Image 1 (cartoon, one colour):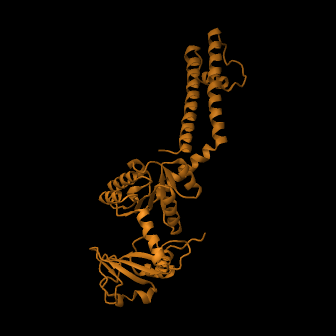
Image 2 (image 1 turned 30 degrees about the horizontal axis):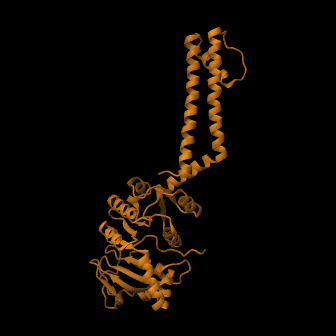
Image 3 (image 1 turned 90 degrees about the vertical axis):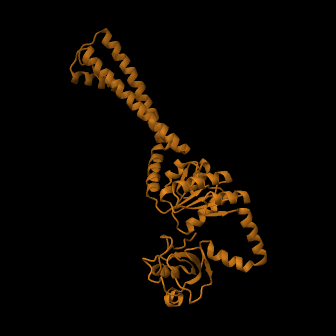
Length: 354
């Protein structure tokens, strides 16, 4: 679904084309009349048509009879109407800034076409705004999809890449590059919309990681069946966080400090061990000396078969396709990034200040 401004731009573009075609048709009719009806040469016929449509006031190229003068009057009227229509449309375009809007639309399309390994955020409501803020603070390339024009206008005002459309439709997802995307986040207000969005995304790109929002436990189960890699319920998550804030407030503050925010001292990051690129595969943590080389701490290791090793010891062996969950400062994780094969190519990222 194109935005309102985009619809107006396309309408105006079509109207200008129609006006230009109408003027060319009038010029062709005039030229053919003077050539075949009046029997003039091609050069005289074209010249007479041009000066008539331009209303410059020159005399007749060759003498005209009563019928020829009536046609010339009709030609002048048709030309004035066509030119007036074009001038009116062009003036509206200049005043309303549609040419600038067209330029912005073309730049936006080029930017969308250039996106690769990006994130797609479906929905720019209260949840979507918070997700977008976190993505921006992490310097993640992402595009927003929402069917409400006011939401898209707000996203564009915040310098986000945004497209108006129905995220449940294949056409919209293809428009924002679902086949090249790394992750899709379905944060639409309706559970049914999130379900359709996940189904469409997984059909178009089975490798994309799909994260979905669910309002009920039933919707959570159905989204998991539909192929969502992770489903988050704001009510369940919010309840757990409130309980944690009451029971373990310092732990919650620490976790918030390393998971979200622009001014963090420590970060959590994932690294995937590529057996062809990582020289540490096959070594133990003690032999790899990741802590001494980088300063980052390996908190957990998830094996390729899904087994999670929390708090690995120095004797824990690094295996192919292991996923390391590490904590450290930005500089420590940059050093670790040069040692290991990272899961995401965007790291290292520099925290942005407000």
